Image 1 (cartoon, rainbow, N blue to C red):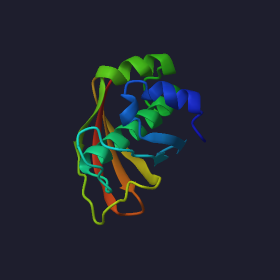
Image 2: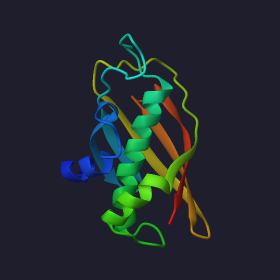
Image 3: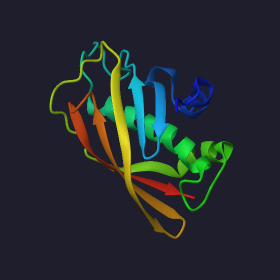
Length: 152
């Protein structure tokens, strides 16, 4: 299912315009796919032509937010919340606690970058959920594992 652009925009409102990299996302539980457009970096004085771990982390954050913004209201967890509640939750109660960003090959930033996340399992500790995910950017150029915390 393609995430409607209006809903995607609402999810990404938290980011500065220069850091809104996710331009399209689709989900089919337990996987989410995204397309990213990385422009000039805000932290360098010269244009970089390759993705760094900073951009990779932002791309993965945005894809996770977008996916969980659909999965939580769908009832994929024991506790269901609506989209408006999710937008509040993501501000302070949802974050990547561990990521293993490794590049096997450079990822050029002059083209659209594709990637996906896959939710493997969830552990619950009271009102805290730990989600274990795999990710892939640009067909294996960067692959790894992530852990995401959600405090519901």
